[in-house]
Image (cartoon, rainbow over all chains, first blue to last red; front, side, top):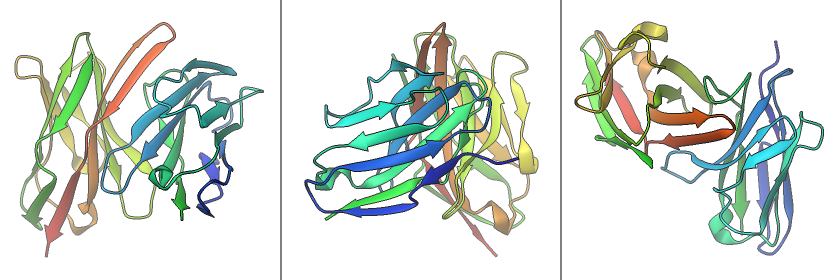
Length: 113
Length: 115
């Protein structure tokens, strides 16, 4: 079956632009996670959804970051007024329930110039 | 609070020799522990997981890990390295209770396999 997909795979933005990153989880997966992975680092937790409810957004680095999952399936991570320090790979993962086994997408590499 | 420390950022082994990737964790609760592998330009893949059942956990591709509570360790091992094992490996500690989920990744260990 299809895995987790993310689009776009690569995004180049000028500083100050808004970007939207999309995640399509595995069908039927209740839980969805977003991570930020800077070059040479491990993934850092950003936010977590259970169905459409955003249960934890403690990892979002600033109020420029916003995530939604309105129908409990596809999720979008939006970054407003992008800054150079936002350059990273953004990973999405889904799981049947909770954090027992997460299935990761290929990531979106964001470069802010 | 929880944290995870991967003691080596790089490990280099010869093909056919044993692999040891070290991971120590800290958690105020009873955590679950995972190892994920990331091959270049590919997504993270689950290798194995510990969720309070058997302390010796077997994973894919011949990898295994032993949960040692007294040492707060979850080291990853493989008896004989293969060239295809060259990748980055992440140790992950998690805790969940009801709707509360906490996930912490280590900083990763890059495994190099020398032919």
